[in-house]
Every structure is written in structure tokens, then in C-alpha cells.
Image (cartoon, rainbow, N blue to C red; front, side, top):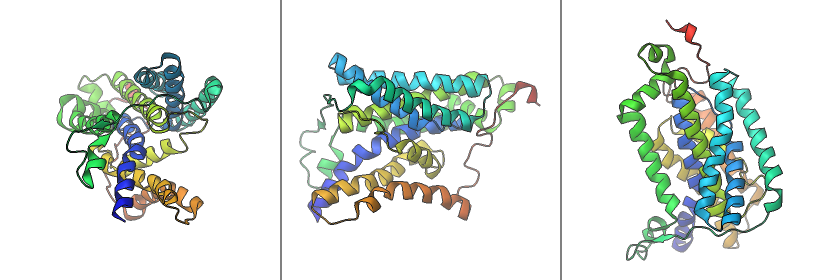
Amino acid sequence: MTEFLVSWLASTPTFAIPIMIACVGLIVSERAGVLNLGAEGLMAVGAMMAVMVTLRSGHPWAGIIAGVGAGMGLSLLFGLAVVVLRADQILAGLATVAMGAGLSGLIGRDYVHETVPGLDKITVPGLSDLPVVGPILFNQDPLAYFAVGLALAAWWLLMRTRFGLRLRAVGEDPAAADVAGVDVQMMQLGAVLASGAACGLAGAYLSVVASQVWVENMVAGRGWIAIGLVIFARWNPSRAILGALVFGGADALLPRLLATGADVPSYLMMMLPYALTILVLALPALFKVGRGAEPENLGKPYLRQDRR
């Protein structure tokens, strides 16, 4: 039993990291008042581009950087639509999902099932051999440690710096922020690009690090889970770490059970992360938990002539 638990917990970060990275980016965007529902499409282009560049260059880090760039490129289109042209954020987000899925399928059709070199795990001498905690905490890939640092850095930036205060002010009351001298459009566009970079990195992690291969639809709803995790984390990047581990643990459970030869209803287990997402979305509405955590101006376009 102990061996199963250690194996399950050690594999959980691989499933949790892409959700965590995407969630942190989405929190930054939503704190600036922009509802980005395009995470699924942004992750798809990031995953495809990362594999394509890795195969051509032979370097996984080059592929990961390309995945980040692909996510930023597609998010720029979304940002221009919702921030500059003031398109409906929900419709633009859904269009981004469709564009991401279409582009990744079209451009990446020659790279399906092509394997790529992944990242070596960082083994901390001495500590990685510790019983139970060693494989879980001290034998992970470098992006796993980077993701935790990214979430904590985002929390510090949003909650403890003047820049974060200005960004949150844009999401709460853009008219007041505008009067105070904040460039609302530039702040929102920058936040959207940050969310695109994070989602692209999350997709690159899925294809280059976790799977080391690319297939169509490999994101498989994880972008939607990241959106649900934003609500679970109450728009706080540090809480996204715990939430991602919960969702990642649920996602990692089925492969571990199958590896032991357990006779489990696989389709029921596969829907567990998505059932958790629905539960996360429903509970705050039912019990009015965390009211007030949501940015006041989330999803609403800002027109400067509305300034008081």
C-alpha cells in the first residue's frame, strides 16, 4: 500500500503542473478584468509547436520556448479582439479554442506520434533517496520546481507590489484606475499575453515533458479544468498550487490503479477530474463561498468615455 501511495504521489506533479501553470496565467488575466476562456486552444498550439520545434532543433528547451511563443501569438489575437476592439470576451474565448484546435491539427499533422526527447529529472543528492518524500519532492523535472516558483512569484507580484495593486485595480474598477493614470488597455493586453505565455508553456509541458509525443486533442479538457481551478483558488496564485495537486492527483489515480492490475471502472475514473471541476464550479454558487473574491469588472469591456 505504501509503495502504491508513493508511486501515485510521485506521479501527481506530472499531471498537476500543466494545470497549475495555465491557472496562474488565467488568474493574472482575470485579475486585470479579462475573462480568458481560450486556455484549451492556447495549450493546444503550445503543445504542437513545442513538439515541432523540438523535432527540428533536437533541443527540448527550444521547443518549450516555441510553445510559449505560440501561446503568446494566439493570445495576442484574442487580446486585440477583446481589449482594443471590445469584442465579447466569452465568444472571443470560444473562438480562440476553435482556432487553437484547428491550427494545431492543421500544422501538426505531420508530427503526430513523433516522439521527442524530454527533460531529465533533477535528482537532489541524498534527499531523493529519502523514504516516501524523496521521490515526491526531490526527483522531479525542472519545470515542476519552476511552476511552484512561478505561482509564488505571481502571488507576490499581484498581492505585494505596486504593479500588482495597479493591475488588480484595473480588474476591480478600470475607470478609477484610468483616473489614477493607469493605462487600462496596455495593462489588460499585457495580462492577456502573460496568460497566453503560461498556457503555451502548459501545453509544451504536456507534449515535451509529460508525454514526449504529440497527438491531436491531447490537451483533453485540461484547459477547462484550469479555468475551473481559478475559481477553486479564489483568484489567488498560491492557492492554485494546492488546487492543481488535487486535480492532478485525481488525474494520476487511474494510471496507477491500472498499473497494479486493479479492476476499476476506467471510464468512471477518467471522468473524475471533470466531475471535480463541475463540483468546484457549483459549490461556490450553492453555498455562496468566497463571495467578493471575483474581480468586480471581470468580463466587462471598458470604454474610456464611461470614466466618472
